[in-house]
Amino acid sequence: MKGRVIKSTGSWYTVLTDDMAILECRMKGNIRLKGSRSTNPIAVGDIVAYELEAKTEQGVINAIEERKNYIIRKSINLSKKSHVLAANVDHVYIMATVSNPRTPFGFIDRMLVTAEAYGIPASVIFNKKDAWNDKDILLAEEMISTYQTVGYETDAISALNEADMETIKSKLWGKVSLLIGHSGTGKSTLINMLNKDLKIKTAATSIAHLQGKHTTTFAEMHPVGVDTFIIDTPGIREFGLIDMNKQELGHYFPEIRAKMNECRFNNCLHMNEPGCAIKEAVENNEIPFTRFRSYISMMEGETEEVFD
Ligand SMILES: Nc1nc2c(ncn2[C@@H]2O[C@H](COP(=O)(O)OP(=O)(O)OP(=O)(O)O)[C@@H](O)[C@H]2O)c(=O)[nH]1
Ligand SMILES: [Mg+2]
Ligand SMILES: [Zn+2]
Image (cartoon, rainbow, N blue to C red; front, top):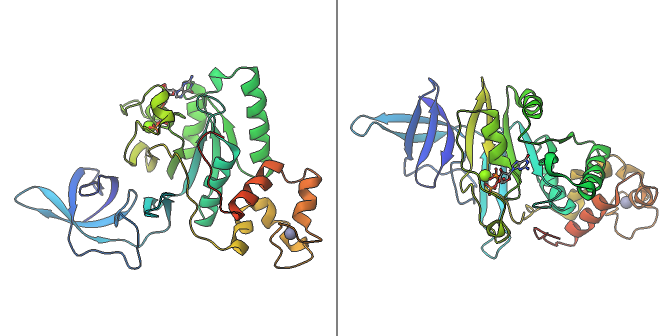
């Protein structure tokens, strides 16, 4: 029998079975994903085969289907452990806010690069539009125009606004979407609004958030409609980039990818080389400066703090 993992706490997995029942499962001891160095062998979104254990009425997962894709969240602390955030994702939505809390450009860029590296389409949602003051509006306009210029679908919404929620719902339809972003940007609030039967815990943005306390502590997939799911995740404080070589990084910026063939040297890293078409495009404002700044900072291996 098969099902989809909708929640995982490490030792227990909640599975939505093919006949739409919820079943608590354990993992059979000997399953190991080949070549996996992550801390969790089974992730939210995995399609698994299970058997029912007659005496406990619980399930035992005995196989994991090959993943269409997955997205890894790498911790930037010394442990360097990686954690599969979710598997089999059709679209990544980056939830950002211009204030309370403010999402830096560099943070959005790191998440976009990660989605590109895993080959998963991504877009950006700016939330809490209802609370913007004049200064917030200016920053939001700049950020929205930046991401639209480089080709990402970008929406400004309020999770409290019904019409905005209908728009978001229509975009999610028929897909498995992953929602990521800082703590307090309103990810769980948005999901509660998309499915009024859900009562996911949310909390006012506070000092606790600034100290890295998260209201949502485990990734969990929630139904929004027929064949439509959204995965809520704990707020990400720092986003460690997955390992990639320096030649590779430019490919994960669509605007750099589109122009890199025009550089004089075909191995140009767009740092200090002469005849660099990317540097020229930044000077001519064809490539947004903040994007190039993020590229350089990633090339130099810097990590982005939550609040810059
Ligand atoms: N004004 C306003 N407040 C919002 C909006 N969306 C969410 N909030 C508020 O923002 C706070 C944080 O919302 P959550 O949904 O808990 O945020 P989260 O992203 O799930 O946070 P973590 O689970 O910690 O990652 C709550 O007080 C929400 O009511 C919005 O569109 N407008
Ligand atoms: Mg939450
Ligand atoms: Zn170049």
